[in-house]
Image 1: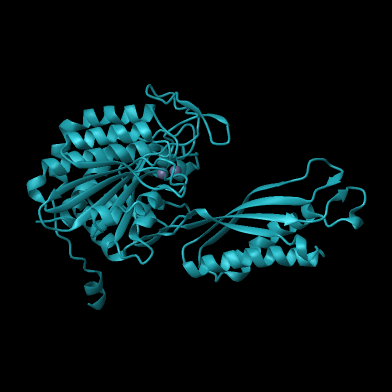
Image 2: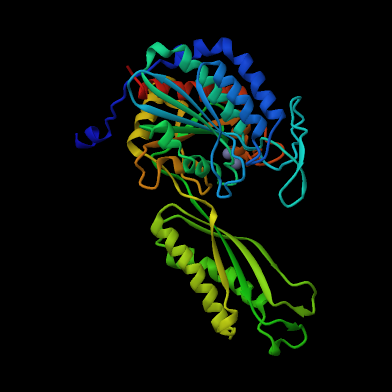
Length: 442
Ligand SMILES: [Zn+2]
Ligand SMILES: [Zn+2]
């Protein structure tokens, strides 16, 4: 009895999913055309100038009050292309709905008629194709569909709707830039925040999320193992940073296996290691780049402290002079907090979606160690209840073949990733509008 009471979630129905589907049907062809256009003209992180302008025009034409070029990066001279579209509809709660806009430096190989042919140069001068390989074009189109539906259904809800198109998710600076520019001060601190991501692991249309931690805290760490270089034939005369770096790569794994309490999630990955120029020259230093992931703050602190301690310990054991101890730099810009779904709000929306879309249309997602800067919108004190959910985007047959026979699925961030966009967009709009009209119920 107690358990039953605890699990009972109060859900106010908004507009029904059938009604949303009916209202959306005549708008879908135009939305899919917009999707194809966005897909064919992707822009890299922090460069979403044309994409944001297209969204702003559409949102304005629907009657939203639109602010463009919203955001402030750490370098205040760098323009930010955030879009904030507000629809005030009487007294009531404020709901923030977020989509991200940036694409990836991937050369598309999908052979779709609307495949991207865009080429550009990365900041490091590398020539590359550009592709919406993470599905942010699906997210933007869903946001536009939601915008349109919420105007059409205006007499069915009350409150303030704040739709944001966020730049630079892939590099982790976008959400931060919009909050730094005063998103909550200028447009009101939202009562709730929701956002979605198309999911290459799930069959098209399946909604999957979970209460609590869904995605990881991401830190980037650079370590310079310094030694004293010399001739490769006389190792007795040097302090070899290659040997020390090799010891370090292996020893770092003991933090996860021996220090983190079993049952807590943690990842320490050395993704890059560079040192030396020639077989018989021992270099002065070796550089390593790490991604460090966890959910809980105490685990994060333990990982970061362990990395510094082990690096210094190895240097000391190898007799490195005190002025050549390792440099361990934890990036203050390249990081994302763990994504924590407000448990009550998540249960509420999952129940609502099950009621509206059917039991089998909603799944509980296992937590992942990927990162998402949507996490920032709930704020450090988690005072903004936020829910991030996945919408399946893969061919159900391909997902089945993957699960049964281990056939590889085209993953997000790869050149052949082509989500079943029409189904994902339709479901994205449906789920968002059902949720929005329930949260902003009359
Ligand atoms: Zn991505
Ligand atoms: Zn993404």
